[in-house]
Amino acid sequence: MYAQMVTSTGKGVQSLEDMSPEERAFQERINRGEKIEPKEWMPDGYRKNLIRQIGQHAHSEIVGQLPEGNWITRAPTLERKAILLAKVQDEAGHGLYLYCAAETLGVSRDELLDKLHSGDMKYSSIFNYPTLNWADIGAVGWLVDGAAIMNQVPLQRTSYGPYSRAMIRICKEESFHQRQGYDIMMKMAFGTEAQKEMAQDALNRFWYPSLMMFGPSDKDSVHSAQSMAWKIKINTNDELRQKFVDQTVPQAKYLGLTIPDENLKWNEEKGGYDFSEPDWTEFFEVIKGNGPCNKERLGARVKAWDDGAWFRDGLMAHAEKQSAAKLAAE
Amino acid sequence: MTAASTTLDPAVYADWLMRLGDNTLILGHRLSEWCGHSPVLEEDIAMANTALDLIGQTQLWLGLAGEVEGKGRTADNLAYLRDASRFRNVLLLERPNGDFGQTLMRQFLFDAFHLELLKSLQTSGDPRVAEIAGKAIKEVAYHLERSADLVIRLGDGTEESHSRMQTALDDLWPYVGEFFVSDDIDKAVADAGIGPDPADLKAAWRQTVDEVLRAATLNVPGEGYVHKGGKRGIHTEHLGFILAEMQFLQRAYPGATW
Ligand SMILES: [Fe+2]
Ligand SMILES: [Fe+2]
Ligand SMILES: [Fe+2]
Picture 1 (cartoon, each protein chain N blue to C red):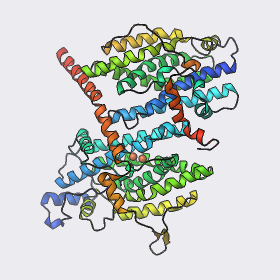
Picture 2: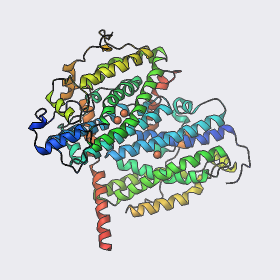
Picture 3: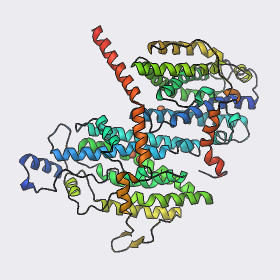
Picture 4: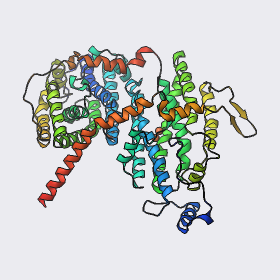
């Protein structure tokens, strides 16, 4: 997902009896479905875990501008260009809401960005794949935003108030993102031979990386169990991946495109599709920095930040002059 | 502006409308190059938002240009299937982005002109022009507010930001004169009561520019050489590359629907 493999700081879930009175009261509030607000007491692990998860999510939104931004200047019509601009602008806005949500936990946006730039914090593996043809922009909206929605809709019910509210705002915009992506796919899949070929090529390349977005199976992970007890994570990775596949297969069929998986088969018994796992070795390589675009993506963000230092310093200096002048006048 | 007194040759009228639409298209293109690469997240959002406004305006201006021309060309046909010599934007807007200061200075110098132009077009003798101007002016007033504010803050910021903004101003200044050069097309449009004589917009533009640059502690360069030609289709080398990129899909896959 946008936050993959967030390791929790907890050592697995404690039973209510083993908790301190504070922890127990906290867990009971979560169990009742109450929201935790910034000023309220929370376990250290909960705070740290949330910072990692929200931070990683925020980084994903801003790095996610890059693969799509790659095609804004080449969008094939004025309307497509306008829609893509609006979408990329939304993603930057999502980054902003999420950094604000993280700030309520006592970490500044600049601190989080420093960690992104130094490689201490990650962003979603999906954004390390290139957008090579115009249908990729369709595939990103359809599959990548589609997978993001899968994860974010349940997170609207997450226990931390500011995170939950950010998710509610974000989800409203995400469905437009997915629709515009699918709309591009329809134009391509029902277009000329060359367009169909681009559409199939895009699906071929984005299918498994999209499945990887949900992260490796976590049914036995202690980290995930703790996050789920805290309602920072609502579903297991496998549950979400299954839901995503079940939703996407008929959409691909409608487009007349083939999902690149020979093992894809309806399973009557489980009421869902059987499908092949993505190549997890590739996934771990991408996480380690060896994906096709890791260097470019992070490099672009670091360059933007470094080249912009004079701009941010200039604004800061002006603000200081203004407040000094105001003080002097009083 | 008075109501149309002479009839305007459709080809001349369309050419003039393309000046409006090409300005917004080319500047929108340049701004969109910043997406994801600007100095701070708020600026990523603002760059995309401004580009989006300008592309929306392009659809309206070029749409009307096609309609007036009467040859069945759509806004997309005009944007994607004309070569550089048919483009009518002023040269300033095809300047490469440079550093963020150059981008902001270019934006400010143009926004101040764009606002005066749209103010005047709101009373155009052609209600279609007046309507587009009325819609665009709200967006452009905001663009100017933002770009002027940033020029002031950076001009009067650190030594470095000041010197970058002064350099940007000095580099771009030779391109602003083109805004106000009137040619036969401008005169015909003015005579028809549709648009202003651009020379008449200069005083108000200059007042805004002087005020903002003074507050920014920047030195206004003297009147010097003026680069021009964009309005007649004589461009810098940069435009060809903008179009090669922008028009790639339409050129490589003619006739496809996107
Ligand atoms: Fe998003
Ligand atoms: Fe999105
Ligand atoms: Fe706007």
